[in-house]
Image 1: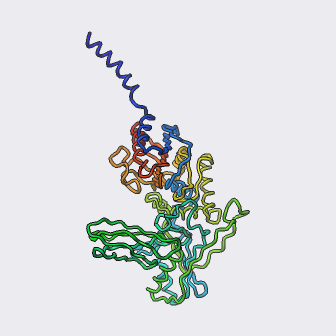
Image 2: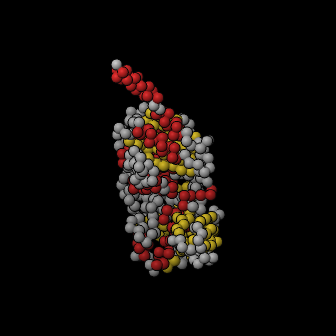
Image 3: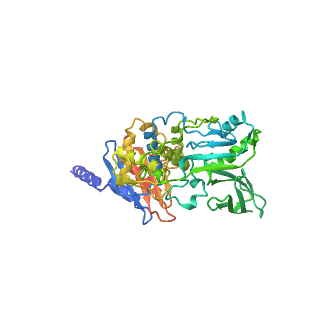
Length: 477
C-alpha cells in the first residue's frame, strides 16, 4: 500500500514540476535582466515557418551599428546580376590627358600597393605605364565617379583619424589606411616611427622601463601631421598603428608617382586629386531625371578585380567599413549618380520587396558607423527570412561570420551549443551592440533572429546577456 501511495505521489509531482519549470520567455527575460540598468533590448526569433518564438520590443527601433552591413550587402547582391563575375567595370584605370597622367577610381575598394600584392595591384598599372611612357607632368587621382561624400551623415567626428572612419572615395588604395610601425628606443627616449612618409609624425611618445604600452593619436581633419602620445615599454615588440586618410585620391596618386619614379618614369609636376561636388541633382528626390554619364575614356591600362562577392565576404566577416560604404555607392550607380541617397533608394526597394514596413528602418550610411541608423528587430527578421528564400540567399549567408569559428564571431559562442551553428553579423558602437542572422536550434531547425542592445551604460556590456539568451532559445528549439 505504501508503494502505491508513493507512485501516486510521484505522478502528482511530475506535472507540478513541469508547471514550475521556467518558460522560454522567462529564461530569456532572466538572461537579459542581468544587463546594467537602463539597457534597452530588442529581440525577435522566428522559426522556419515564420512563427515568432520570442519577441521582445519587436517593433521598437534600435541603432544597428554594423548590422547595417547586412542591409548593404544584401541590397548589392539583389541589385547586381553580375556580382559573382570578375569586376570588369570597377577596377582602377589610367589614361594620358595632355601631358598629365590620370589615375581614375571606378569604385572598387581593393586596390593595393602592398609589396606582396598579387591581384588588383597599383604596381600592375605602374608597369603598364612605364612600358610606354618615360615622362609625365602631373599625376592626378580622379575620384569623380561618385559625388564627394567622404563621410556619411551621423558618423562621429572623432573616428576620422582612425581606420574605422577613414574617408570614402571612388579612388581608394590600401583600405585608405596608413600603416605606421613604432619601435621602442632606450628608456626615456622617443621610439622610432617607420612609415611611407605621406604624413608627418609629431612624436610625443616616451619609452619607459617597466611600464605599459599605451599609444594614442589624433589630428585635425585634412591635416597632414599626426600627433602621437603615450608610452611604449622598452621591451615591447614593435607596435602597429593604422591612420585614416582624408584625401584618398591624392594618396593613391602619390603612391603611383612613387612607383613610376622607381621604374624610371620622370614626374615633372605635382600630385593632385579631383572630386565631384555633391549637388541637389544627386538627390533622387530632387532630380527630374538621371543625369547622363560621360562616355568611357580610352584607358592606357585598366584593372579587373575579382568578383564583388569576394568583397561581400570581407565586408561581413571582418566588418570592413570602407568597403561597405563603397559598395553602397556602387549600388547607387545602378539607377543614379552613386550618391549615398541613391544607394539608400536601393535599400528601400530591397525592404519593400521583402514586405517590411517603411517605418521599420532608416539608414544614413552603408557601414553602420552612423548613429542616425535605425531598424526594428521584427523588420530585420522579415528581411533575413526573405533573403534566405532568394536564389542567392544561401551564397550570401555563407559570407556571415560563424560563431566560434571565424570573422567577428571567432571568439563568441565557443564551447556553447551554438559553436559552429550560428551565422550572423555583429555590430558595435558606443552604448550599442547587435547581432542578427541565422542559427540552428537543438533540433537542427533553422531559426532567424535579430537582437539589439541600446543605451548600454558606460563601462557595461549588453553582449554576454544577448548571447546567453540566444543559447537558451537554441537549446529550447
